[in-house]
Structure formats: structure tokens, C-alpha cells
Length: 219
Image (cartoon, rainbow, N blue to C red; front, side):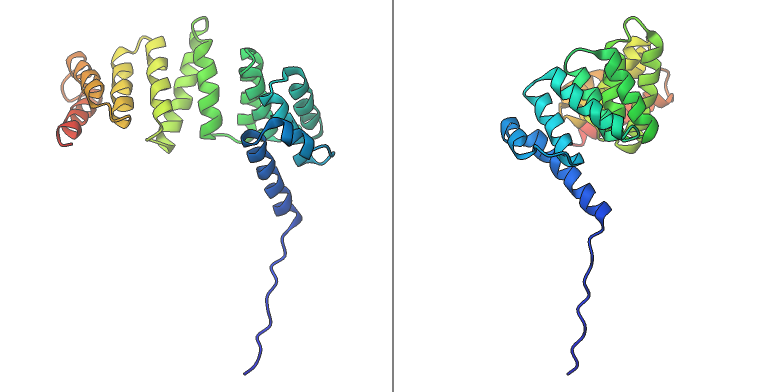
């Protein structure tokens, strides 16, 4: 019997770096921040990334922002560093700065649902004074729902966007979809019936609202 040679699969340096980045992100958000800072004192990208996340969680706003800004200076086209910067700004009340960072991130990796969702929430939060932002948010949310039709938060925000724009029937239909996915059938039926009373028979909104009621009645 002849021995067959063993095949060794070499891990590329790119794969290793990507793995360390993912590991740093997970540990940064899930483990104790103090432990993360003790473990990551070096100058590698993944250690600096972990530190930025840990400082953000403590929370030490200025230090976390300085840490992520230094990474962005070295890697200006990294969308995930820009995403973290946006999150740091957002959770510390700097809406405009957060919106700008999310938009930069999205320019690098377009049509990313998680980033579009976060950005839409901020655009809607500031759309009371800028109706154009509600229109932009609505377009992002329509895009997300095409990709992820079960995304409950996207349906919820879509309803808010329609309300801001005075699109009552679409807002009510989004609410019906949201509550259907939450399995809150009473509220789903309530909003679906509102849509039926507000819209013309055989319109797309009217047909979908009727379908929602049929689905609920069959459960």
C-alpha cells in the first residue's frame, strides 16, 4: 500500500490578519474592557482596534476617539474603522459627526444593511429639521428590506420615515408588517385594517394589507 502525501494548507497572512481583526472586534465588545486593555498593549492593528472598542465601552469618549482616529489616519479607507468612529460619535450625542462617518463608511462598502440601518436611524433622528434626510433614510430602508425582508427594525424605521414625509398609508402598512413579524397579530391587524380603509381597492397597499389579515386569520 502506497502512502499518499499529506497536503498542507498554508494560512495566508491576509487571512490571519482578517481573523485577528474579527477576534479583536468580538473580544472588544464582549469581554471586560479592563481585561482587553491589559491584553492589548501592542502596536499591531488588531490590538489598537481592540483598545479603541474597549475605551469606547468603558466609556472614555476622547481616548476611544483618539485611538480610532489614529487607525483611520493609517488606514483611511477602512470602512469598519469609520463605522466604529460613527458609533462612538453616535452614542455620545454627536449626531452630525456620526452621520458623516457612517456615510464615508457606506461610500466604501455600499449597500451594507447594518451600516444603512444605523445611518437611517440617525438621519430620521435629525429629520425633524431636514425633511430631505427622511427621504434619504427611506431609500436606504427600502434597500435593506429588499435584502432582509424579515428585518423588524428596518420596518419600524421605514414607518417613521413615511410618517415624517406625510405618507400615512405607507406608514400604517409598515407598522402592520413590523407587528406581523413581531407576532403581535392584534396590532398588525389594526394597522392593516387602517390601510384598507385609507386606500383604494386593488391598490398595492390595499392588496398587501388584505394579505396580512388573511395570513393572521390562518394562524
